[in-house]
Image 1 (cartoon, rainbow, N blue to C red):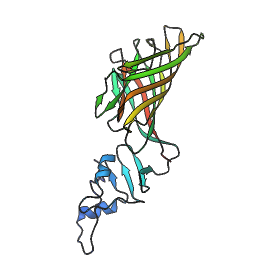
Image 2 (image 1 turned 90 degrees about the vertical axis):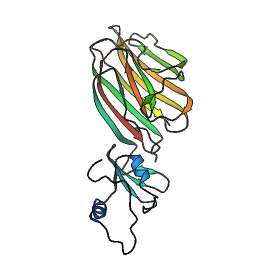
Image 3 (image 1 turned 180 degrees about the vertical axis):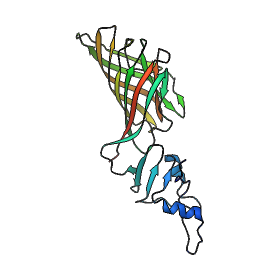
Image 4 (image 1 turned 45 degrees about the vertical axis):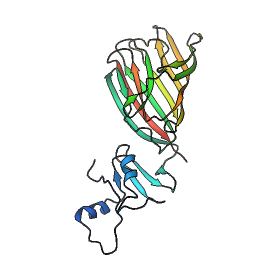
Length: 247
């Protein structure tokens, strides 16, 4: 945790003598927490404030300031999309979003990924993830459609698979992938939908654009996702994750 982070929001009583540490907490202004779990644990306990409408909080892991509207935490100054996290990926076979990227703070999310180089041909897939572990059950379903730059169709669909396909064929070396998807209600105990688009090149000539319509067909909560390549240490790129503001 950072220097201003705290683990509780104290409820001082009349006549109480405050320590230097307590005064430091007060002087930080908006309470600072490591993440949403630390924030939620800081209210309502013995000697802590009761969470109420108008409370502010700052989260270190996502660098977001929030306010409590009486029912849920909302970002301050949000206008549609709220930036959560991002990173540059270098020479990875698989990479995963940080645990708790998807939380109950928001219902829907946007994931954007673009490769910047690749030395070998690769096929790219996606899995959903909970508490640091990919879900590898045969519960992934998809009905994806598309076409290449010659007009030939590039459709595929299946049920009961163990991952979502992002590229239908091996992406050629020196050719790149662009992916943007919405993850619909991953923290709700129910089906999770993943919908979006991908674009890539394969076989040296065909440029393929795909409409992705994918479903995890079981009632499960997820807090992250993973991108997987068939080529060892071949994922190089940049990703960003955003939340759709609740209101």
